[in-house]
Image (tube, rainbow, N blue to C red; front, side, top):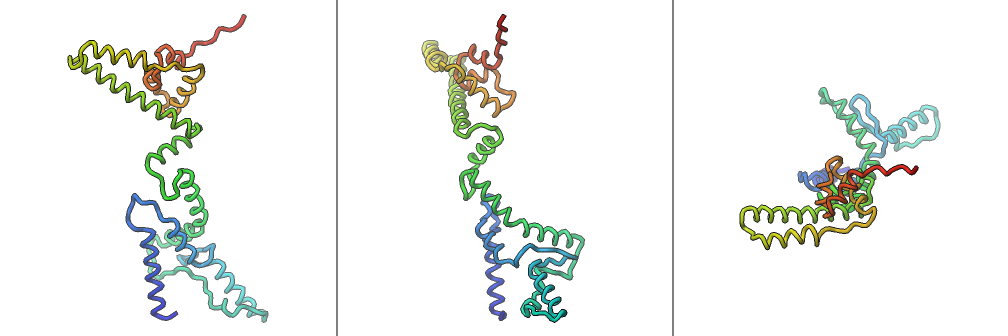
Length: 249
């Protein structure tokens, strides 16, 4: 390789490294650029000995050629010039052995790491890197054993009702401070406690409570369940504190 070709190769390598590590901590790693860089490396697996990192296939090919030559057997002449070294240094320091071991290990693990990262990104729903809220929801989903559709349904329903309750509490305070007259407040109260309270079918409220309790273990009491599902307090009490069924005689 000429000096000019070597300089061009170094420039290409520098550009590839810059493409992978651009300094933006919030940007997902460019797996395609990183994998393209990996595919140009010496064939693996790699080995490490006394801070020297080498390609095992190239080293084996050279070793086999030397043995065949000594024994007078046909051998690959080109392989005699393959020392197999990937990296070596004479400027050693106390962490050189660990550096070499890590470089070797990460190179050998690269194919599996690429596959696992791509699978994880696909699970999160966006191969380019998911938004924060999608990552958060997906983690809860993965750890809860709840279907994703059911999780979103319950969480969105609870959020809407919590915001309604917040607005109603604001009106309570406004009424207490004389900012809302009695008739207006009574209208708000009737709408919230009567018109807005859901008539849950048998088993539905229990299903919602099971999801909410998994999202916030030990926190959802009857009062919280009543607010988050807009159900009657008696129904909430029956779900959170079910009465034991009498035994049949």
